[in-house]
Amino acid sequence: MLTVSNLQAGYGQSQVLFDVSLEVREGELVTLMGRNGMGKTTTVRSIMGLLSPKGGRIRFGDRDITGAAPEKVARLGAGLVPEGRQVFRTLSVRENLIATAANRGRRPDPWTLERVYNLFPRMRERADQSAGTLSGGEQQMLAVGRALMTNPSLLILDEATEGLAPVIRAEIWRVVELLKAEGQSILLIDKNLAVLKRLADRHYILEKGRTVWSGSGADLDRDHEEVQGYVGL
Ligand SMILES: Nc1ncnc2c1ncn2[C@@H]1O[C@H](COP(=O)(O)OP(=O)(O)OP(=O)(O)O)[C@@H](O)[C@H]1O
Image (cartoon, rainbow, N blue to C red; front, side, top):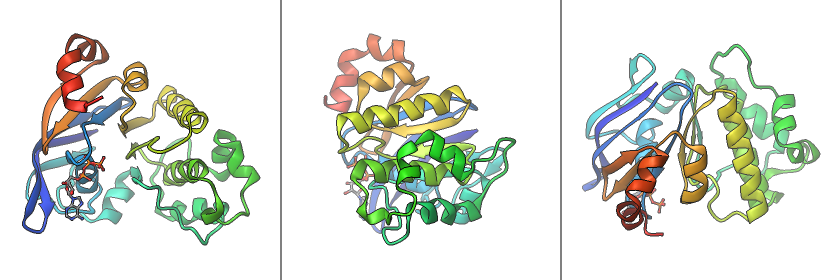
């Protein structure tokens, strides 16, 4: 459903991505790993249309979305949980969830407030509270709920559990696992190799703006030393 081929991108004169290729097939959970600054967020920004690629191709569904506007990419069904959450701090939890629902894609079982509240009961409890007063973990739950409200065919999570307390991390992993079981296609950026190995179908590793490794969980075990070198854990 998503195919990134030989992507090149950067900021002004500075090139960050030189040769990134990856694929997410229908219903798959795929990870993108690599140390800080290797280009993971830049790859996600390019996919979402927030950054215009300098080269390569991005296909989503049956469309070429290389250089497409962010609204178009969202409308076609890509939902992003951005690094740093970026919730609307002065809006309530409910308003945050409703705000993105305007950009809804189509699916047979559309997301509703009720479904999001069932997924994250804490969001129901805090429905009228302004998002800026939520804890970091709660903001991450809200950011996931907000992305789901767009009915994404592909959900992209950038730094899914970065900086969160262990109990909140576990909550996010529980939800990711549940979404995957429901057939949701997911592209996930995170550093928690042990959990990712258990949950994900396939993995990609970026090093200095290039895809340098890809494979399954079993391949991760086989190439343990090489992978450790790339992800630096
Ligand atoms: N807006 C920007 N302007 C200029 N350079 C940028 C900008 N955003 C990121 N970069 C640079 O691009 C490179 C890749 O950053 P990117 O955020 O894609 O990495 P990352 O793999 O997601 O790492 P992290 O986990 O730290 O977010 C870094 O060297 C970074 O300094």
